[in-house]
Length: 310
Ligand code: KMH
Ligand code: ZN
Image (cartoon, rainbow, N blue to C red):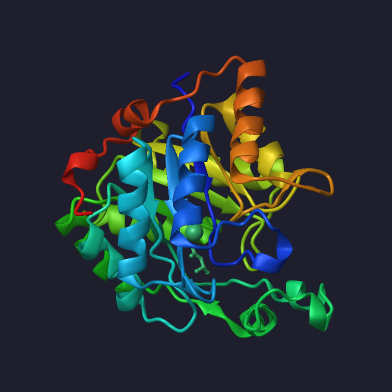
């Protein structure tokens, strides 16, 4: 089996600061956590930006530049930039970060879905929230449709190709594989591809073994097993570690991190580095070696960090 690529999703835009004191918020905290995650064994870090004053998710390219450049100065880790954006942004605004930074890797969401974290809004008392925006932000996702239409996808394909940024195709349900297939059959998306099976989001497929196997079988049938690399996200605990283990056994790759799950053990909050360390130890037990960033670049066919513009 090829070596295991571990991605660490450091902060995201759906984890609330109130949920865990370990969530990196400022650009400096995100940079420091990226370095720690890389030292623990992550080959790639997935980044979102947050407003340095309010900790609210932002897609201000200046914030992304500061984070990406700060990581690059201290680590060889791959930086995978989000194009997920925030609820109030158009798809074009969300994509701005690709021409701005020309990253090696960027997320590419493969279809529209409900994407909700509204149950979190009821989890805390009024005086428990750390920031004034958090409760309304979480509650508002009850009405949020994460928009990724065929036109949006087509435009992002072009931007990624122009900037030689490899898409990390985020697939939240089986239909998203068929969306991908539509673009592959028309020659707009080229094989081989890098897939991230995202499970356990409220609005998407679940995190059972059957869910992952169905996605995998469908991808094999549509694209051919030799034409793609895959990784899995099990959102929440213990799904993050259960599905990482399944993927390690099956030859896939794994993403962990505080964007997806805040617990290292049942009821015990963890840091990004601890989440990575846990996957490294599971991989060791199962005899799977860990890929360095350069090995991951080779496996994924990335252009290299000398070709980014930050
Ligand atoms: N904006 C969220 C609904 C990604 O990083 O590409 C999903 C998201 C995924 O941001
Ligand atoms: Zn993300």
